[in-house]
Length: 228
Image (cartoon, rainbow, N blue to C red; front, top):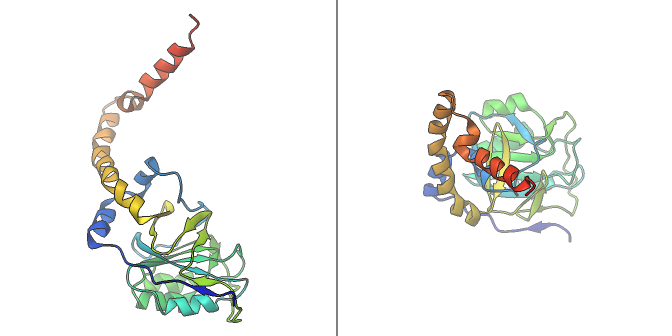
């Protein structure tokens, strides 16, 4: 037997979800280097909202979406479906029917390392979807004894574990372990609070390098290179 399943992940606390709702996701790029999903995985269906939730992972195999159909009925409110297609970028595992199940169960969105289909219909469901593109060629229910549900997967080069926090918007998608995010979210919110003042200073004519200290750093570097 090669099919594997893990425990259904917990959902985010109301406190953390509220903080993430106020956060500009790209601000986390100032603190992190890992977990950023390849830019080729982009927002295909906006769904009228940003994606905030915990990863509910599925690994499909070749053209088979049996694992996905099983998983779709288990997902809970606040989960983000993350699909590892094993590198397949021709067959769409997610379309209107799977999306309808996700929407009915309150999923926060879906991130697919592959292609999707039925985007017009998914848009009407209000489900936010990130993927590499679209296709009319779909997966089938072959029942292959492989793949898994709520197991570690790879999505756009990022390792995704069940329960990791998934954040996605028009800029892309990011996956962060919960404990890491809890340590940096307040710092990121402080950065966001300072940004309007920085932009105002720039509009008043002040140079960016002077405001951030980059120009002082360049001056110090140039001075250190000066022959004695």
